[in-house]
Every structure is written in C-alpha cells, then in structure tokens.
Length: 177
Picture 1: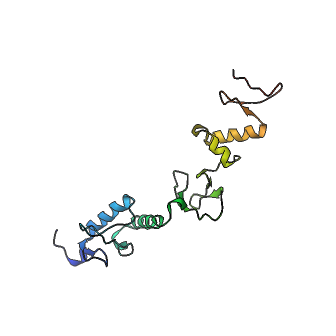
Picture 2: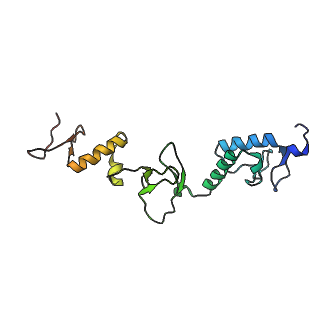
Picture 3: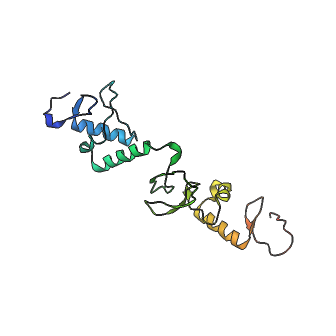
C-alpha cells in the first residue's frame, strides 16, 4: 500500500497486470515454496493467474528458486511413478519409468543401495517377499545381518519366541524353553 519507486515494484505475470513490492512478493513466494505448493497464484485477491517460474527467478535466493523448480518438476510426474530415496538424510526425488522391475538400485544422489521395489534400504540376502514378511521391529540393519547368517548356517526360528536355534541332533521339532 506504500508508494514505491518503479524499480522496487514487480509485475506478477503476463496474464495479469497486478504489481507488488519486490520484497513482499519474494516473501510471499518463499512462504508458498516452503509449504511445498508448486503452482503459486498471484497474491491479488480473486486473481487466478499463476506466477511464472522464469519471471520470478530474480526475486528469490538461488536455493529457494531451485527448491521451487524441483517442486514444479515433481508435480508433473504421476503419483505412482514418483518416489524418494529411502534414506532420511537424502530423500532425493526419483521417477519409476515402469519399463522393468528393478530391485537392486543405487541412489544417484547419496550413492547408497536400496530396493526400488520395496522402497527401503537394500535388504541383502533376502528376497522382497521374505523382507515384507518380517515385522517392523525385524527390519533393522543388524537384524538383516542376523537373518543372513541364519540362512547360511541353516538355523531355524522357534515358532513361539522367534529366537534362532541350531539343530545339532534329534528331530526337527523345536520346543521353546
């Protein structure tokens, strides 16, 4: 609502003629991008014109602009095709083109292995079916290593307590203590 010199003003898009203070519009855009909204409308009430990514580049810090760019790209991919790196400290955006079933994959961002079918860290030594049968509390890295050793040593699990046991002699019946 203040009177400002023309160099401090910014026209929102070619579709509408609304003009705003550069700083205010920058804050508005940053807030919308922070809220993960890829399609940002003109801030004028009842105006449905979309702010154009390219036109707004000069208003935003480069890291905020890059985030907006990524959100716009992500929004163009169908829901079933998009997924993220399963590692919390990475979470890179990826697209499943659906051409073939891939299990063993490497994140192009963090370079760690993951199962693209299960969307989890790589479950070495287990098929996807075996992994999905495990309880949530059995899917840790150490748990998977124990399962892999158990497979190699041909250990069996007690049906009651789920502890691994090694058969030395006798019948195949397991009795929990």
